[in-house]
Image (tube, rainbow, N blue to C red; front, side, top):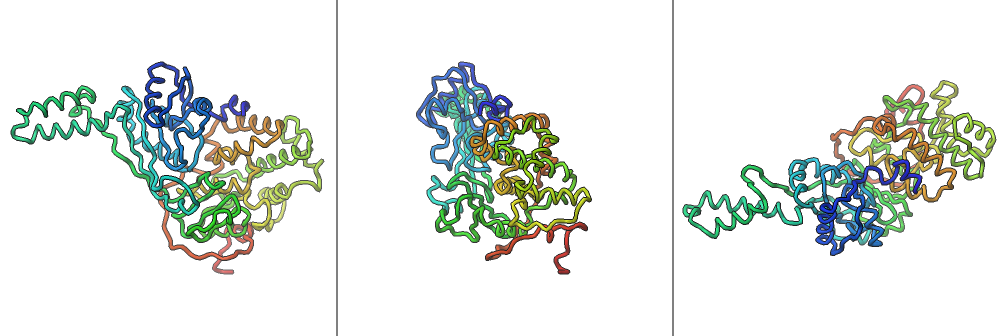
Length: 457
């Protein structure tokens, strides 16, 4: 992993904590939340205040998330909003924390100037004991305050001020006045500079979780579903239908199409489909060559073309399928009939625009694991797990490629691959039952003359 860290592909943009004052504040918050403290003189923290160095020191990477369901956080600065979130258990956690900080940025800026702010992403369950408990997770409530309780004290002071103003003998009440003076010493003048950090609630209809080996839950779609990375039998009884796993490619392809969650990259507006297909083919070639122990040199396209000639009949089916699609894109071949049973099928798709886009792209990265660039961008937890299993040769190639081709223009790369940021308008539809499905055919979704009119078939 050192290679990824060196290139800024892992632990990048963490916030350094080295001043004695900030370390003291962090320790107070850590003691308040966990009963523990750190002896480190400097460390780095992520969006939630988690530190990988402290995790090593305590031998506990989940010291701020002990049950995996209600993540705690420590804010020392509002700059944490731009930091990554490590050890993700739920795909929605980063977006919720970022929105919380951005919505309350002025208040948090003032509060963190005097103390650490800590809080919790409170789920509707206290522990994730069974897969069925995931169904109960619908809302996340974020509550926070400083260790000194400035927000709570400001609320008390505001109440006392209101009593002083409205009660006829308030100005004679020495106890009331003494209480206001005591609280004002901690909070300042809340009449001029109000302190307010109200609880915020976020809906969580769709999400990915690392629990139970990895599960995708889609509820806010026309046909809700749960998709497991492990065999679906391992989940046991779940009050949802359908429940699928990644081995059921035909059912997943049919479900994605019926919910209109994906589109062929050859039809995606503004995408250079030829360039994207070639790059996916390069990744597949590198993996094939690495598996056979073939040297890839500097992995330039000319070198990879020689590897393709050398592999010959041993070329992976994923490569051959994408090569056939590329030939059609470049008007050098007929439109290929690629069904969802073909290993290249999910490499030819991307998520449609909409609020489900990022989660659907995460799912597609599980179904097309040789596209290492997409996996790194949309599903870093999965990428790091795969990276640890690769040879040093492949690790070097991937790390250098991402540093060269992605790091220099992250936003541009994401837009080129996945389109503009999703909008918020999505329409709810009733759930429909789903039985065994035949293979989906990419040729039935898009042909040489655009989308096929299903009503005429």
